[in-house]
Image (cartoon, rainbow, N blue to C red; front, side, top):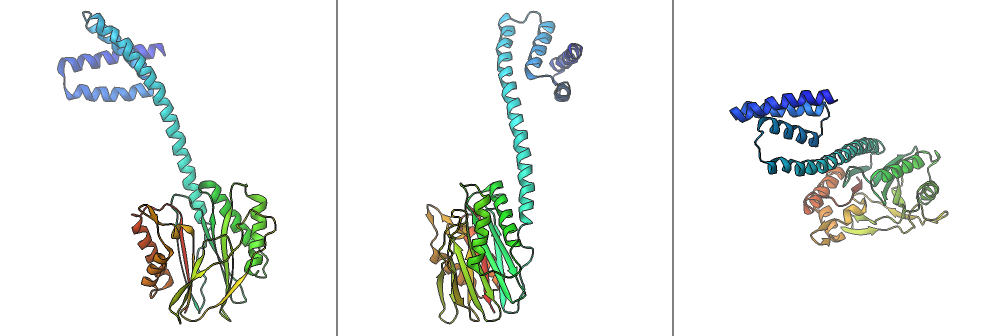
Length: 336
C-alpha cells in the first residue's frame, strides 16, 4: 500500500507540474483521470491532501509556513467530510436496495389483482385502481360462479407499503380458498374476518364491502365491514342513493355479525363501489364533497362503465394536480 501511495505521489507531482507550467485543459483532463485512479486504489480525500502538501513542499520550498500549516486544517476538514461522505454512500446504497425490493413487491402486488373483468350479457363492469405511491392499500376481487352470480369485493387496508401488500395477499388467499358453493355476502365477510383476525397485527385492520349480483333475477345482495359507502343510481327516478352497509372492520373482533342488504336492479341502474381515496380527494385545504363526486359520475354516466370510471378518475386527479394523497379505486357495475 505504501509503494502504491509513493507511486501515486510521483504521478500526481507530474500532473501538478504540468498544470502549473502550462495551465492547459490537458492538465485538468489528467486530473480528472487521476481521480479515477484514486478510487481504484481506494485513496481517501484526506490522503490526497497529504500527497498534495508533500508535492507542494517539494516543488516550492519557499512556500510560506502559514500556507503549509493551512493544510493541517484542510486535512481535518477532509477527514470529517470523508467519514460523512462514506456514511452518505452507505445510506444511499441501502436506499437503492430497498427501492429495488419495493419495486419487486409492487410488481408482485399487481399479480394479486384480477386479470380480467367477468363477462355477462346483462352487466357492464368498469374498474380503475391507482396507488398513491408504489404500493397500494386498496384491493378488489371478482368471483363468478356457475349459478349466474357475480361477486365483487373492494377492500382498503389501513396502512401502506409492504405490510399492506402482505395483507392483500392474505385477503386473496382467504377469498380463493372459500368453498365452491358461493357464500352470501355476510357469510363471506365472516370467513374473511376469521383469517384476518388470526393473522394480522393488532395495529392493522381492513375495511371491505362485498356484493353478489344474481344475473338471473337481478338482485344485488351486499354487506360491509366499515367500508366507505358507495352509490346506487336509479334510472327510473334519475337519482343517486347512498349504498351504505354497516359492519365492524375486519380483524377487530373474533365473531362479528354482518348484516346483509338487498336491492333489485333494473335496466339502466348502476352500482358504484369506491375506496376512501375517492371521497377524500383534497382540493386546497378542503376535502371534496360526495355530491361533487356524484356530479362527475352524472357527467359521464352515458358512457360505458370503464369509460365512466376512467373519466371520473381524471377529473378528481386533475383537481388534486395529479398528486394522489391516498389510493384511488372506483368500480362501476351497470345493468344493461
